[in-house]
Image (cartoon, rainbow, N blue to C red):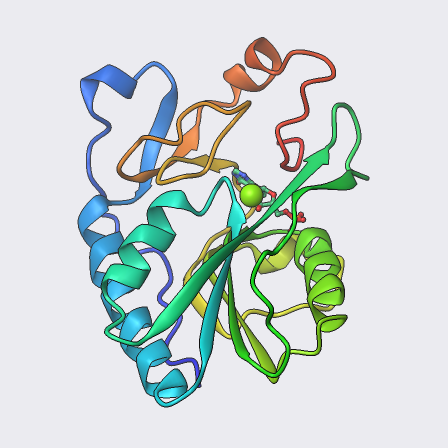
Length: 210
Ligand code: IMP
Ligand code: MG
């Protein structure tokens, strides 16, 4: 089902635009590499879901850009819905997952493509998969832009992976740190010195403490 999982494309990664140089250490995945990869992922998904009653279920908020680009490249009849999840991890790694928005569409007996920005420990995905299973979909496939396999705690895997990345904290193209940087058109590595400066106590932004 999944074809290749490209590692991060070469050392010829783009320069950090001047505007972001103080915050972003380096560009991990360029805008062009993302665009190319998303087109290939869409082709794989199209092949696997043609002729099905497809519901794309996307997790808020990190998937905004990825989802928009992915579905634009999917010439399939589909419906779109969202689940809101937030994990509050102010100080520790054991985040409490809170559902902020539930599905509105009925996925019973339907094919579901579950889209997230990044698969890290797998806690979020395994909880969401559990919740979805209660609606008895016909099949569920998981699609993520990024995968950090070295951080996995739960035994979840994605069927479609954009890029496997090492254990670095990344932002951009929808991914945030304390709700910032989602609008960067590339995926970049956040300057580690910002971790302590920007994360206000108690404002868990839904990701692992870097
Ligand atoms: P998991 O539950 O540990 O798999 O974490 C999944 C969620 O954590 C993702 O949906 C992201 O919101 C967030 N996350 C994990 N790693 C990163 C990162 O490097 N940058 C930004 N967000 C991240
Ligand atoms: Mg997220």
